[in-house]
Length: 470
Ligand code: AMP
Ligand code: SF4
Image (cartoon, rainbow, N blue to C red; front, side):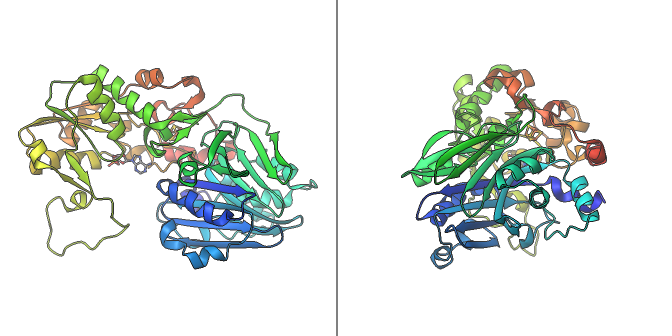
């Protein structure tokens, strides 16, 4: 049973919602466009005019899916949208959200960012009771629980359902009369409230507000159920943790640097500070600092500023790569990495180079990059600096990470990793350094760096955790 649903753990998503705007679907399209980095596998929008619902979703990128003609059909003053990323296996249209269902109280649509850790067990129990699922997504479990609740209004039913699920969830629900935004009691994934021309906007990240000209109001609080309808805003609260567990990896890699998350902290500023602390603790004699674009840019800027070394773009990234490309028949050296990155020989030749990236997962990217900078770029020395601590544990709360065995830092010492990636030196940001930068570090989840998982697996699902941790 567990193996069957094992792919649940690979989810990264972006969500966006609008209430009270005549162009709700168009704004949602733009919001999803700004949140494209949170998921590229598929996207969908569900809108309502208070009577009917309109749903459109497809595999692919937001701008490729929605034409003017398709958007025109998504009528109404309220809408929710979803960008989905997932690894192969569960990659299919039936898993693309929003999901829209009918139940005894009417219709309800859901868009979910995060990952439930007891979904396998709940689904098993629901299926045993006769439930039929249309997707393999954990989010559908929430809809079943809402439909089965015996309470007499949608908000109480949502509360009821969410008291049973465990894990990370930033959620949007849309029914005939309201938009509902929810954040799990730990606040693992970000979710913000904004306003545009009197209409309320909800987004995973504030970069989506910027594109449509909305103003940020506040974050949805951990454990908050925010109901938006014709009477305005009303908050309810989920029972649960007093402890917060904001995902630090949003700051390290996942969120866009121009976003403000977790009570409005600028992602770029935090990344730059990570780079500064990294430089303070591990700078080395060199000619220049270069980033691995785009993920390493803010930290490399911080590193260069603190170390006093020149900064340059020694690697150029091709931004126009689709998910597949046709490989040449005859083998071309370094083809796999060259399709994405190319070194600037004039910058690198005969130089001692410090290369800054945000993280090492399996180590394969760093190995290729070091080789490329040395062999193609002609650098004399390559020193790798990583603006996060060694990744030693998988994520169960909505970031796509491989099993522990595949994480190079879980099985190798830093010196062994250095040898593997063939760098002249290698250093990571320490956990202490990370905590120095974070405001109120006790409010963050650092589990993939310190193995302290804030949301515990229920007994029934502990096998899944064990399988991931071997
Ligand atoms: P690897 O080759 O597995 O070590 O991959 C490391 C690279 O992947 C780094 O350059 C990161 O920017 C990037 N990265 C880290 N975490 C993720 C993730 N969850 N999804 C996609 N890319 C990631
Ligand atoms: Fe974020 Fe890592 Fe915690 Fe997952 S385990 S929520 S990636 S900090």
